[in-house]
Image 1: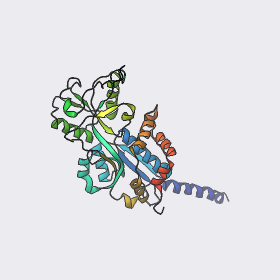
Image 2: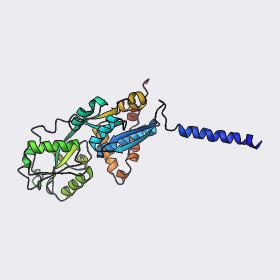
Image 3: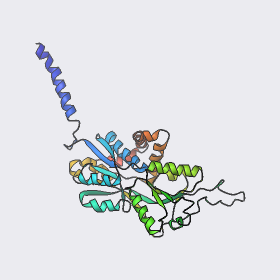
Image 4: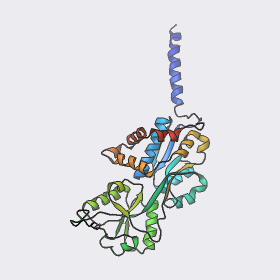
Length: 310
């Protein structure tokens, strides 16, 4: 009798084991975990945490984010180490990576249009924005174009403040330095965080600085900045951020593929999330800020996750 009474408990235990063992499987019959590669820029922190939140909260998948350098990110998607990236800046910034890997990846097209890269300086006046006469004061940095950097090399201390060395914008900046004859300048390598810290310090003390910059980015909402004119068009006319997935994702995870194919938003929508992430302790909790964005944009989220038959 004792052994018979134990049977229901044993069955419950076996059922629990089966449920746990199946937790890593998708409805499509594959692994339930989606892995995304990204570079640690404010734009990509925002977009990848949002995609992760939608996958987990709305679609029932697990999602892992893997931070990488840009070249590693493209290689990881091409080899199938990760499932996708929503961080492909095309056609200029990551164009050389796409050319190298395009036969091994699936490009789903733009998830955001209206990007731009180049060299950026503060457009901030000394003291008041206008003089007592009502005439607008000039910005304390007088350079308007990249060729003028040679004229003001001492004011800029022969430095262009950049980010991680393998970023596409850094490769373009090295090209710009050659084409515009900026041999006396040094391109300072670092990170987005260190670049913004130097920019913030220079603006507070009204010091001359030129940095590698891109749109969309929350710094353009925080400060009045301008792109230096690029007469030789080294940095291109602008472009988009694309979603690129590994070969076979459509077969293995059709629902994930469909969502990533539909995922798109505007620079202003991304800008709102980036600003929220920067607020207070938000940089420590980008996922929670992504959940906040989802609550404020339910219609947009539904447009990404609707089923094929809808």
